[in-house]
Length: 612
Image (cartoon, rainbow, N blue to C red; front, top):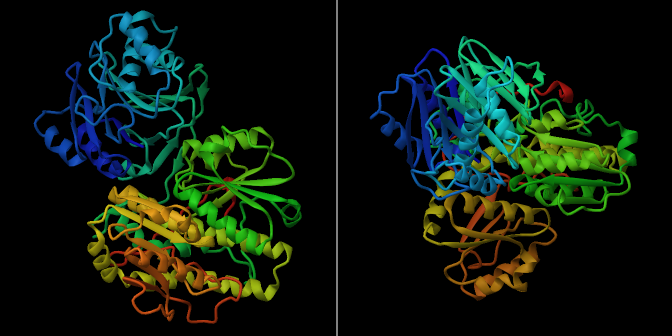
């Protein structure tokens, strides 16, 4: 995951590029760089480190050009060095290119180009593509009526295997930019005689709200006055200009230390927005206008299959528990990355759901296409208007949580948990859940945002606990049933944010191997709410304490633990009204730090989902 920003217009490109990269830094912060076209040459600046380091480096140059490209990198091919940072120049210095994705056949292309006399300054697959474009530019004239610059990019991409989102500039095409995508998102911002290419709307929203979401296999040729979209096979594409419905305020920190903190405190509002308008008038069930399935069709479904990656897969696992419990339908939650390769036997009348906040997760998109290719209906839980998954799904549920910019998902994850719970209710009420139980279920769901707000009031104390354990380098997260996926998510969060080794397990499985890791140096985090298996969890905590392992126990208010069993106790608020005897909203769907943020406005959902 990396960030791309490109600009063609009347302003100094460097200002727009740096501003855009700062908004995309969550997509990669190993290194950053930019290239500006001026005085018939490409001026380049790139450095390892964060965008702030690049901004200081850029001040040493006199960037005055109005056409440029930039990139913030999360290294996937080649180490973290200045040389491997993007943009990359061709051997003849005529082209500069930035790239997201992986070129799988780069080695064969590099071998060919080396034989043609091209040289390489980095270890990346990206530089190979840049030189391949230069090769085609030098080798052949363009087709009649075709831009030679555009033609050389097209010809190069026809030889590429893998994924890409690219932006390219050329010294012999001043004031022009060519961009293309396959499996990696790219968006064109359409301004007043200026255009911005970006991998995320956040990079361009301060300049324009008019955007074109490029599709796989499309190439856009941009000048300072106009743009043209076509396919690799030179077929013209009529652009669809959408309007982003959130404004720049949604992409600002608003006093928070970082975006993850901001989005943690936006969770109550995000949950409210995910629920808004989605309960029946009698308050007994959930309704979704965009599923494009009626009650009769739902009753004919004999199995659900949920597909996702990372955090989204954890949300799928929770949905599996809830649907099986309340709707009594078999559910399978599968890694999207594995599903499309393992040739799973598909039979009966299953309904597929894909979960993806961005709507551009390449493995999830591939899994969706595989299921559709085999004739199955695929619905989506998604947060991004105009995304590939939103466009290609047969219907779905839009999350309405606003832009999520932080590196690790917070409000989008809790929204997915909520939607999974609402979907379980929706199906259960079509089968054998009573009206009375449906009303209690709905009331419990409606109480979730208030519970999260109460939980966030404990932020200062949770911060203190975190500081006491910050020196540890190994953690275990343990839970049972629907809280096992939450344990997986807790471990994932610690790994991706703190770079600390952590593992999530079903608590009962600890004695089958992981217990060997327990020591004074390895804290264990237990999700242990009061309930039917509370005593089972107490036994698991005892096993940890017997090996002198620190135990951090997250439990519900009013739940008493044996004295001395837990080193730290974090209590989760419970509903003040009588709780549904079947289900209560999971209190473990919130992280915490400092002070609340204002609610986000609802997003407009894609028309194809017709979502109220």
